[in-house]
Length: 345
Image (cartoon, rainbow, N blue to C red; front, side, top):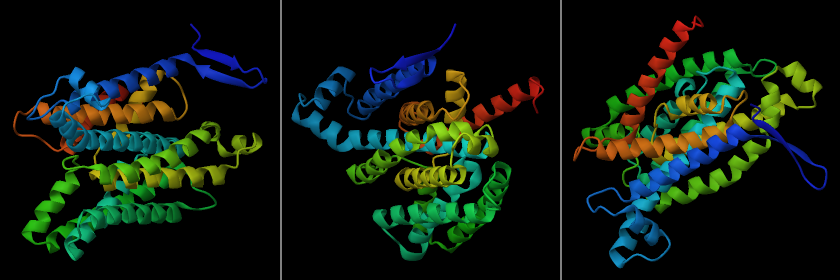
């Protein structure tokens, strides 16, 4: 059964539509939104899903309005935006490096953002705003360092991954040193941040991340065709009219910004950027970067993990980074076993 359809506009513009991918995107969006409604109703003061929806449309009572709109909705929106940013950033890194391990977790972007945040916490006793700015700056500096060290007449996949692994080891060592310099209060605060958590997130984290996504997501999707052609090789891409290094540089910067901003908002939430693109590709069964499905998968994964972190252990709630780490580790082990049985590793 064919899943590709050609849609032709009255002006003669023809667009290829992958029906299966479209169905997967819609289902992932529905799953993410449904999980968001359930998560908003979860807590010490339980709110039924129907009342959550009524409150979101301005028909709730005063207590529901406060709990939903001021306490829980910002946290859920941050979770959706962080998951979407990590899923899209992971898809970009994996497509550019042509390696399923080419994700921010492996390349050291999360560790770089962590180094920036730890610097603000340990050396300057910075508040939430300073920690956020430090994480964003740390991620950008790390990304720039990886790009410059990997550059040799262009940036190629395996070199990018190897340099990223080396950079990750260096920055991890720096983070360990910073923790040894911290007093007990700052060290405890830093460890909680390093785990990755959505606790206490409010509208101050929502608006900057939303603005960044509003700019970068359309920009990335607009360059998706060039990225897909680049998977066939630079020479073929040049022949087809793709300005390879320009597109690669633009998308790398976008991926670094998305990852750094997500880390600044919620801490280094592990494995979402690694697993979301691969799960999306398995669902769509489509070659190429699968940018939009990866974005939706990342949002759905993080919101679901946050719900699990609040419900699975009773009163002992876990940071969402612990849950994503466990789920991502299980998935990675399953993937390795599957690949080994198939004789590919």
